[in-house]
Amino acid sequence: MYTGTGGGGQDVNTSLPYTVGEWQHLVFTWVPQTDSGSGNWTGTLSAYVNGELASQNESALYKANTEVTEDATPPSDLAFGGYNAASKFGNYFEGQIDEIAFYNNYVLTTNQILAHYQAGTNSHPATNYQTLVLNAPYEGLLGGDPAPAQLLHPVTYLRFNEPAPYPAANSGTLGMAADAAIINPASEGTPSWINLDNPDGLNFAGQITLEAWVNPAAAQGDKARIISHGPPLLSAFTLEQVTEISAPLTGGEVFLQIDNSGANYSVGSSDGTNTYSATVAIPAADLGGTNWVHLVGTYDGANWKLYRNGVPVVTNAAPFGAVEVDASWALGATGEGFGDFFAGEFDEVAIYPTALTSTQIAAHFGAPSNTPTIAIVRNAGVTSITWSAGALQETASITGTFTDVANATSPYTPPAGAAIKFYRARQ
Image (cartoon, rainbow, N blue to C red; front, top):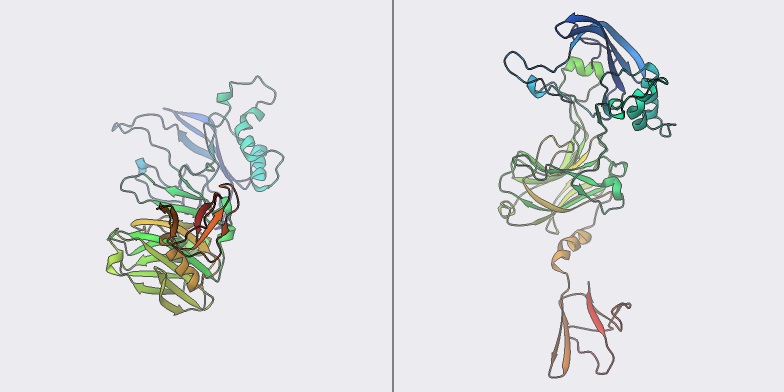
């Protein structure tokens, strides 16, 4: 895909600039015209952008990639978003790709291409996009004898809308909209991280709380993202190309991270130019994978704050907090998953559009160790109930409603009598 320059004699050049940050529908067709010998054909290569014919190359040469080369190299592999392995990769596409389809021995008509584009951009199409893609060759028969169904479907159709094979369910108010995908959960040598995408409910500005239990390994990279919104995948183009297509060179982000190769905890945000944060040195005992640490970063409208194990450890005044970012949220990596991987474990991650108070954060830290335990002992005909914390509750039926026992303190001796009671401790 070009913006007006570049390309060789076998290319088709759209000569149209593309718009950064917007989905565009691209279709390329090739119709053989002349047999040039040795499997080579000359034909017409056409490019369609958003349902309309953009340009054609009527003398494009093509030969099917099916033969082993002279040096015994297998036919080249197929790749999306960059060069294939046979071409040593590189020239990576910056952005997102979806709904890829290939047809063998069938060329979509101009009307079909327009219909596909309209279905993809219409929230209530007469026929949905998938049906149009799968049935396109049937429409081209124009009443002729039908061929076997397997010959009339695309040879490849990749929708990229499958649910994550390793989902992490969101229990917050956004429900399924903030479910996450665990990336590389069982791979060797490849860091694992969690992708939350960028749901509208998580793309907000101002007050914020980022909370997690972390168990950091001893060795960390220069930056190790625990929770990250962005930054976007920035442009690798030249400055001249960036000016021409408005590709992004800087981008905002929101982060809770370890930085300086394991020296600091840090929370903050950046608008792509200015960064405001609160940073504190990490106690040596936190690193090494032997201690879980409760880490919380907040912005309350005036200050970024960091809390470690329920205690505030640093406050830094700042003119802005969370920023809206055109990129995904991620846990354990940058928001797009292209680097800054966290080494270790994390758990119980929460994101709030408000700043939790010091009292709330202290309660969150203390909750795992404050779960009440209860013991009932009968000795010499006397029953004694003890519990570690909270209030004692009772009910006359195991399926009944529990109510607090008035003025009960541990240990508690129930009144004598024939009545049956069930007890539990409440936080």
